[in-house]
Length: 232
Image (cartoon, rainbow, N blue to C red; front, side):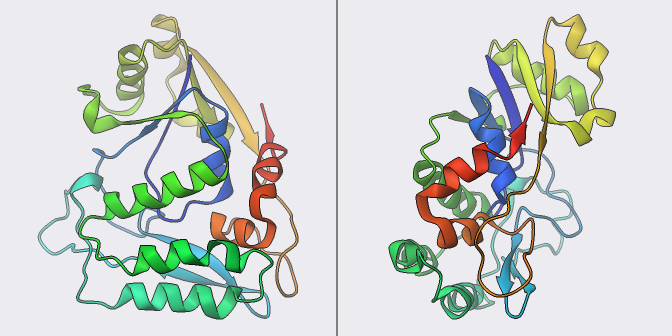
């Protein structure tokens, strides 16, 4: 069984879902520390004209919480972020080919009050997982009962799931202790993901945007587009 691990991002980019497609079990690292600086766990980018991008950021409570885990992060609802995010999607994607097909999900998403960031992100991840017809099973690190850090934590996760292979993007190779995996009889598989090029609104193409941009422009074709961009 092949296992991959990733932080539970907000409005993830297409590569997040390719990684999920390419494994049998996908572990959301929810009990790892929430980064102190900017992070894709609470923000991502959409496209704006003429060929620029806009960060959609979920404000979170940080005062006195510098060492909080991802699954402990609370959203700062004193800021009207939901209206801003929905308004941005409507304003910048109203002319996208598949806007009308999916906008109701976002209206419902941003019409609900969210207290924890992990709950919001999981709602989004599950929506796109279903849309892209990904049948990979999801796990939470917090539910596996394992400890450790770095490669030792990853190895413990794979042992807990009785996996024989770990999937990671090639650029992460320098951070992985391959000898430790080999000692446990676990093979490390690397992949390269070339960000997809697809029909996009406005002028110059922008890479590495949120999955929103791909789906609103290409609909269910997004699955095939993502699959074609991964090279093991």
